[in-house]
Length: 334
Image 1 (cartoon, one colour):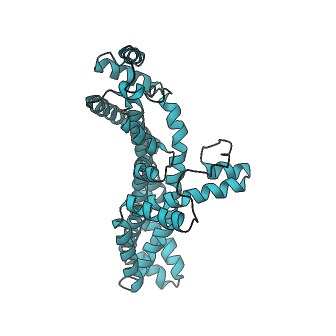
Image 2: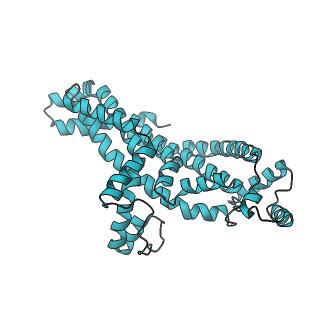
Image 3: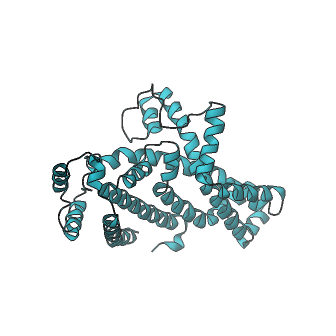
């Protein structure tokens, strides 16, 4: 297991270098001047020249890249052209919001989709199975932007039940930072008012983000369960007189978990890196919205920093999935 982890971590090095090379070249090919965007159209040529020199953008591209990689090895992602703060500081501020949203989304979709998929497999061909497939198709077909706006109209504009944006109401103070996730930090602090308010703000964006994930997980669970329900050990367990619940959850589901974990892990990585649209719709201050802000203003260091972090997270999540494989199925241990 240790060898597997070490090999995968070593393989991350060329992957991250490749990502930085591609992004460095592509961002610098954009026909726009990030310094001019940062300073505004009223900036004088002297101000533009001085800021360019401060950011060392007047040196050849290959020198800028070598300098960037050298800083990256030390954990320095550079300084944002727009905010003029270290990119690491910005990412540290925005990342907990995305992590909180993503974890809530994956928990919600798993709690709903896995029992739904199991029920559809057990009742194959019946109304429960047909209803589950219709719901999966319906949710997977809804565009994120349309579903997000629809929920805002129903639950905020029409009924006023749930907030439509941000992480907390304006009159509430965020809890003391432990993880940066408001729900967890407020629970630790014992502040129930902030906890329930943060939870209310989480509901709509988490529903939108979990939408497609729910459909995929339900389908994979159904398919995987159908594959194992006809196996000999399931028939034997039923013949021994074990309860249907024990047969399903102790024997069948345990052996059907590998493809379910695969998809759940991959989707978690996708959600972490792909929450951009959801965060934009709900004004959620996460790294996805930070990436949109960086793209709009051609902020090279911030954009590359976001991509490196997203790549690293995706790789680490897949490594975690491989480790879980080995825990669940001894045959897959190295």
